[in-house]
Length: 498
Image (tube, rainbow, N blue to C red):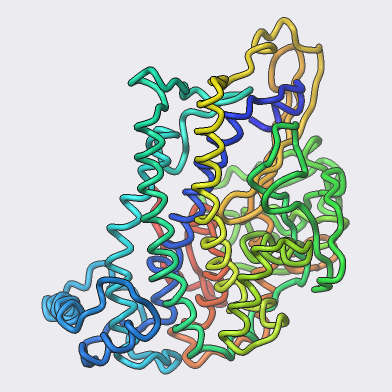
């Protein structure tokens, strides 16, 4: 939408800006907590070890780091009994696919039991808090109420079929629950677990270049740079300078991708001129096993000024930190102090995990702020939600092109569009996992995933949990990498996308 709004120069009403911020904000909070507990925790937490824990000691541990209400010995004993039933049944369900007993696990049994309990709590919590997106966006994760020029959900305090005072109160209560869990469960767990794995501040450094398009606009200007999380680029881990973002400096290579450019594999293209041409028509995939000196990926290789860039929470928090963002700086400095590490620890696997937590907390704090802005507009009688002045294609220029920046939970998401005679002539997007999971380019430069894995110690090649720790720290999109193959071509695992 932002790319079309840019192409047609459509400015959205303030209420639409706020509702978009609320939808994005609760998605950040829910998505990051789900990532921490349900997609990443088992890289660090040994669930089976929790069976050996003393529930009374677990209670003491939990109460030492938080005043969360579910922290009694009886509560943790109940969770332990559930886990025991899973194990004794031989059907581990959600806990089946992990490397239990791996020597890389370092948490004591009591910490494992505490984390397992919160894993289960987070399942119920996330279902409740995402109701904000269901109310405002009608669907999660792909909201249905977005329109070019604004939003489709009406605002009217006198209508039961629109956002009204009751809706605001409902959202407010859920936002409080979201923030409380983040403050009293997620952040304390993150700090507790990280304290046992401080050596991971020395692994997973990556490419050292970080891109943030900025998120949560403070005004309604098209592609505004005035956002709560600022726009910018950090090069070579240098936090002393934040560089501006110029979308014309973004190019994509297909040198090692299963696509073709008419100009050849050494060429790169800006998304406005981008092509996604896959011409292989054989009965099998275009490979027998992966060869990195040839084409080996379905992902293109985007580059900024010919440099690979990392996208995601770490990039956003580093750009905010280096830009002097007051609240981000306060929270990051507090986390670094509690872990007794310096700012250099941010450039790591552990840094990505910590940055995601920082971002979740800071975003959760902003939900009531945006909600108050919406309520204030309604109180003033401002119910505008959509700008339809240029809705008629007959009023559009014969040719137009635009771009739109957005920061998805996983990172920088850019859309580029060309419109001709009222129709889309070309459309390209560069998504976060394309930046992070990109293969090598024409210069042989690796993408962030590949670079971050260099130097990672692996205790057991058949159970590479250390590899998972770094790759999962980026929060890769499942649809961008649906199978894992080892160096000999043997399939390790396959994820069926339905």
